[in-house]
Image 1 (cartoon, helix red, strand yellow):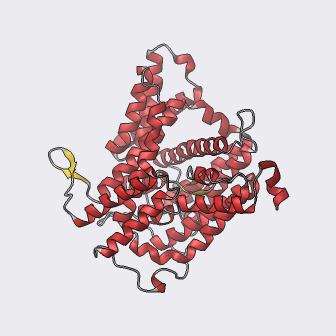
Image 2 (image 1 turned 120 degrees about the horizontal axis):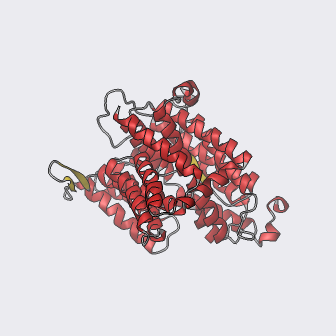
Image 3 (image 1 turned 45 degrees about the vertical axis):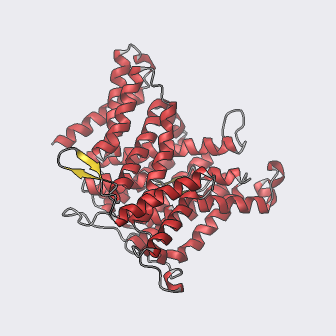
Length: 445
């Protein structure tokens, strides 16, 4: 085992790798409870006609299994201390844009995730994935990440009434005297304190403290005995295999845009995370990531597995940097994290205490972390600032990640051409320009 993971070469040992795996798990364990809340649209009391709700128990199991499978593949095949799970942002796009906004059945949306995963595998094996990543301007990649952060935070604010609708100003500050809203505000403050003080699993611990506070003041029903904490693994039957039975429904313009968005966001989530984790751990060689194709394949395979199980796109988690900071340098840390996700399957009863008030702070804080991308955008060049700004603001204002991406990818070629920088535009960008123009034409029909 030590020889396979090259412990001596990386100057590590079992204890250090185990602690790193545990640290990474605690930093990202919040996804086990946030993902079922988001995908099941738990915060939406009255769903529009024709929109059905996914089973939260099945999503919990799918989330844990997808994370375990993806992280295990990453650890054993790519041998990197990088953990995977259904990604924040992509789950919001799946639930709020595709299912709630477009009215696409969640089963068809899962088929779209499956299609994106299969395409990823082909692009990875042929080496095209890396070339396409390089074709997208870095400023737009940063804008998309920041925009998704804004969108996620906006969902968190509205889910608990911190921000609410207004007939005169569209949105306004909510009723902060409402006990449930106050509980969410408390959760945000506690999580901020934990993260500022350097707690690795600050988001997860913040959820725990908020849930306990909610039980103390009577806003959340406490679990009843040991059966309210540990229980049997929820059945996957409501979601398992739904992607296969609805695969024939993905061949429309609308679903093409959905699949492209899944592809695009996962492209850069994964690429950015791999580089960030490898750089922090000193794993880069000559500014290149060894075994990059294996890492990308692990990510693609995890997305396919997750879609079959019943969850949105599974991707590499930036929280893996917490494990690296704790000393993780090899795939053994990922094996440990994967084992902990398997163990977590037996704690599904805790879903009952993880309400919107508990998950909203996590959404807001993750949004803040993603918005950090704004600092690296070249705002001094107006031809760059226009598409970047429109990408960022369009996502929360239109309540759609896809629309934000489409707006940015339409304006980028236009502003660059007007500036006389047309030769800098990759042909791929012109292709995406046409596709997104068709997207808006389709929407108006």
